[in-house]
Length: 170
Image (tube, rainbow, N blue to C red; front, side, top):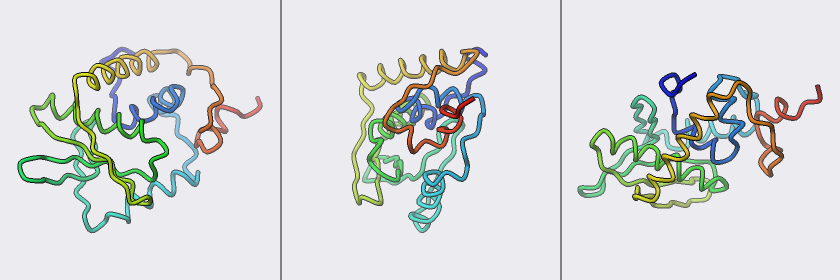
């Protein structure tokens, strides 16, 4: 699997920031437990919470939850269940802004956490581009591994939809 064979998405960026093993599993199309409560809650929020305002846009590896305009500024919104994974959500949104910039579209980002009634502005900077490019390169490296990275216990394992895959006794 070379760089050309790997199709990195914003979701891959999000998972990488939490668990590189999860990125390998996703890229290699190993499905998580679809009945996991966290997956169900995420689907519900995504499908129903903003149904009236839904303006989703899908551009290749960029799937934008909502777009709005404030004056001359284009705002790209990413909607998340909670701010628990705020750094992951931030880099997912930065990835979208970065991809849009490569298409000649300048925009700002806004993370939205409806359950917390909270928003955070995200802007693409030279520093964030540099970090994002390192993340993208590491995702390519991980994707090309023959087997997934070894599981590492982190605080998020307990609620992960892959927990049975990583921690089942064999």
